[in-house]
Length: 48
Image (cartoon, rainbow, N blue to C red; front, side, top):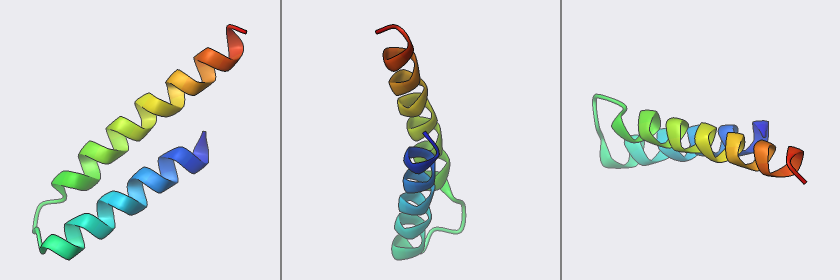
């Protein structure tokens, strides 16, 4: 779970830095997507 969130955060930071954005749009979006994905994985594993 933490690995998914860290990967999303790192990817967003790198993408924002690469594009030279002053507001971290991709970081915020990818963090939210990765948290949602991590929650999905946890719920899927628990429901088995």
